[in-house]
Amino acid sequence: MDMPFVSNLYNISGKIAVVTGGAGVLCAAMCRALAAAGAKVAVLDLNAEAAEALAAELRSIGADAISVACNVLDRDSIETAAQIVQLKFGGVDILINGAGGNRPEAATNPEQVFFDLPAEALRWVFDLNLMGTILPTQVFGKLMARQKNGAILNISSLNASRPLTRIPAYSAAKAGISNFTQWLAVHMAQEYSAEIRVNAIAPGFFLTEQNRFLLTENEAGDLTPRGQSILSHTPMKRFGKPEDLLGTLLWLVSPAAAFVTGIVVPVDGGFSAFSGV
Ligand SMILES: NC(=O)c1ccc[n+]([C@@H]2O[C@H](COP(=O)([O-])OP(=O)(O)OC[C@H]3O[C@@H](n4cnc5c(N)ncnc54)[C@H](O)[C@@H]3O)[C@@H](O)[C@H]2O)c1
Image 1: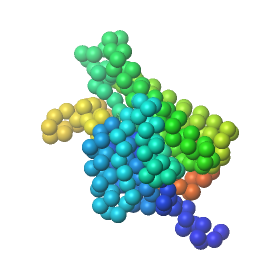
Image 2: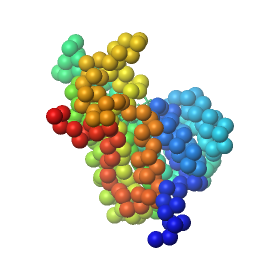
Image 3: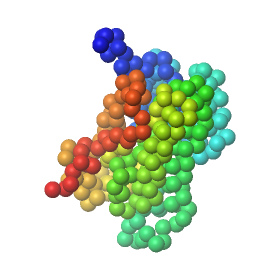
Image 4: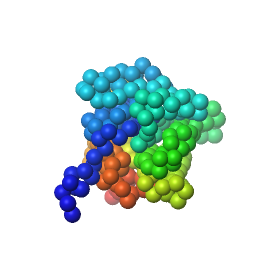
């Protein structure tokens, strides 16, 4: 084995990466890592201001980065974003489907039983997580199919394999993402190219805006009983930090994972391995 091969395993320098929901907590960390690894980064987000602030930050440290306002639930908006990315960068090599989230109205609690959860809130969660992954994949995946090369990374969750209490729509939507990841990996390899790979990361518990209402209960950030229960079921005894996702990210989008497709990698401090005893 030659050493240049080994030193190039994680080389994504010059690759063009599109990150949806790129201005969010976890995906902003991913954008910074991709830029630090030499990739050109397109930060796509509904929040155009936050996306541009991040792109400007990346440019200020010498990276090639742009922001593009994009709604992952609107095919026209995604098509327009793809045109802008192609115009500015000339193509796409990596797609991170990061836009996603949950809503208190779609979670059960003592005052809000499952039978009465509003359909609108449930549909919002399904749409944002599942359709918000499938629609951008149709648009950017088509470009990858044409060039017969690319890496797609979806963001599932540990509750895809075993649902957590209280959040039925989010759990089912993330299960859909894990399933879609496998389906698309097979489809791309069989129909277009074995060099289009599709994988997912399943983050464990990262204290962020989407779950703060479930895990902490006051200004001081004291843990709710649910937050305490999570830590007691996490062998590593802490919540994840966005940086914890970066090694898996860089592995899955780089040549190091050239023969890896259709997998969902838990990054959860051992939560999914622990029986509780
Ligand atoms: N935080 C966790 O513990 C955790 C755990 C498992 C999985 N995840 C998943 O990781 C991903 C990122 O989570 P996060 O905690 O960083 O969330 P976040 O809320 O910080 O970021 C989500 C981003 O998506 C953007 N967005 C929302 N709707 C959009 C739309 N329609 N079109 C385009 N952009 C849109 C938001 O503006 C925001 O910038 C999500 O898919 C989430 O479900 C998070």
